[in-house]
Every structure is written in C-alpha cells, then in structure tokens.
Image: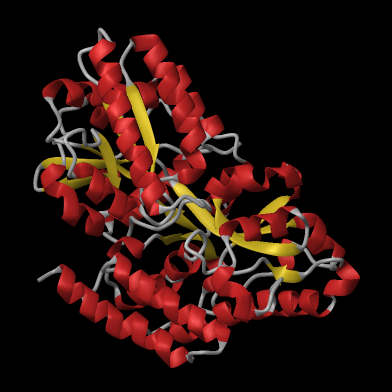
Length: 452
C-alpha cells in the first residue's frame, strides 16, 4: 500500500495555507444528549472511584467525539489500565452533541482531562482550558508542526487523525449498470450515470442510485457540513482566501445541483428525508439497494461486508471548473486538547496515555487497524483500511485534494440553519432561496455573534 506520507504532505500544505481543519461527522448514533450526559456523569464518578483505589498517580477521562470508534477506544483504554494501573475512562458524546456535552462536563468537578476541538473556530471557545503541549513528548512525535493549533507560542491542540471523504460506491453494482469509475470524471458524468441507474432501478434490482440523504441528526452532518464544504472550498480557492466574515455564495448553484441529484436519484422520496437516519443509509448501501453513498474513510467498518475489492470512492463533483483534476476531501477536524484545569497528576497521566497511544505497538495498531486512522505521528502504522489506500491513490495520481474548510463555518447554529433549509427544500415546504439565505445571511449573522 502507498504510504500515508502523501496524504500528510497534502494536508500539511493546506493547513500551512490556512485553508484547512474542521469538519463534522461521527457515525450514526441513536444516543440522546441526556443519555450521553448521564453516561458521562456515571463514568466520571467511576473514574474517581477507580483512581482512589489505584496505585497510579493520576487518572484519565477522555470525552470522545467519534461514536463509530467508541468500542475501539474503550478496548484501548482497558488495555492501558491493565498495563499501567492508570484508570482511563472514555465517554462518547452522542452524534452531533459533542459541544453541548463538553460544556456540561467541563462544568463538573470531575471534568474531562482530555477533550477535542474541531479546528480554529472550535478552539476559540476552549483555548483558555488548553494545556500548553509545546514541551510534551506527544508534540515531539508529530510529523509536521502544521498538525498543531497554536495560540501565540503555546501549542493548544494536536490533530490525531487525518481523514478523507467522497462518494463511496459499489463496484459490482456500477459494473452491472454498464459503467466503471473511468466513466465519471465530473458532475455531468455523475448525473448521466446516476440518472440512468435511477431510470433502470427495477431492472438493476436497486431502490435508487444514491442512498437516502437523511436529515436526521445522525446523518445531516454529511450534507450541512461535508457537502457544504465544496462550495466554500471553491469560493475560497477562487478568491485566494482561507476564511471570511461574509461568504458570497458564488458556488451555491453548484451546491444545488449536487443536492438535487442526491435527493432525486435516491432510494426514497425527498419528503421522507427529515426522518431518514445514518443507519438507514448504511443499510441501503450494504444491502445493495444503492450504488452511491457519501461518506468517508471512517465508515469502512460499516460497509466492509461488501468486500474490500468491491469498494470504490469518487470525488464529490459539483460542476466546478477544473474538477476533473479534483481528488477527495482530505483533512482533520479532530484535535486533542488536555484540560489545564485538571490536577497536575491527571495532566501527566493524560499526557502519558496519549504518548502511549501514538508510539506503542498496542496503541498504533489499534488506531490503524481497529479505528482505521491515518495518524500524523512518527511511529504511525499504515492503515489496513482500503478506503485510505484509495485516497492515497488519488494523491499519487496528482489529483488535488479538497481542503476541509468547515472549521471556518461560523457556528453550529449556522450548520443547523443550512440543514433545516435543505430539509425544507427537499420536502417542498421551502425553496432554494431559503438555502441561500441560510448560507449567506446566516454566515454573516453567526460570524458577527461569534466574533463580537
């Protein structure tokens, strides 16, 4: 397999240019905010109890952002505790509820010793709680300083995973329809193929070309954040900027045509999308009822039953000029922060745990093989995730990776406004002007609120 260094270099260059960091995501989760908060409370108490009976000097409490990696983190934490005696508690926030859960947990006496932010915008809310990692062994293991967020000279947070997303597809079904990836080099090609599959869905034995674009909270981040990244990326690229206080919406017509394709050439009627979940989309794709499924490398465990050789991934084409040279969307929105309000013992215990995660055989193997991560650390293992191999292939072919620009989205409220407008448009209760208003006017409003 090609090495992860190609992706790392692309990401580093983008971050250096100030265009990168931050996306949304997390797999489908049915957990409620209340359930996550309740679990966090119980786990905090359990961590305190465990620390009291342990010979270890401190304890670790990690508030995890990614529901799809919860089991892997639980197992890794258990292994570390068995090896060292240090209690490690991992609590996973419900999908789409991380910030709310973090605010609740940080107000408690047993607050997380380890949390995360999704990039510069997220960091702005929490930088006063971030321990300076500049002198840590963890920071010394980074392959590039570009994977660190800073506040002046202080290293406030460190990226721990590089991820990629696009349109995952079923090679067998695409072939049965008479096409291969070589037939899709841009939006017009994608629409032609998808329209044909939709028209012949009964003949092909599928329910639609695309899985349902669910706008339930377990799935809407794929469209109000990940898909919305494309028009932002192309606007920033055209204007030569890395952020803005007022998005112009130059590429919103392109956003409309890819969204129209998703909801028209779909497994369900657009009016049903408000209640469709991330699990619905997975079931449709794995059940071979749809050919295309927008998601990322983190979704491999959900779709692996189709077989590694049967999985492909296309760029998300929106009809922008030059997109035939476009690759997949590659970046990070996952930055570790160590809570500087924790005790000295807990801070050191947390730093030791993180160093073990990115240097030990057990830690690096779990992150590569169980979590499917490409991590930006010197002792990283090549991931066995075939979707990461596909992402590396695009880079090796000279395709330009799409930067993750959603760290510049002004707020979660902005995303929610766009999501609501997309849902109303799909249901026929709103028009596209509502999406444009939420995107453009909502951006200016939320940016002003976030920046005084």
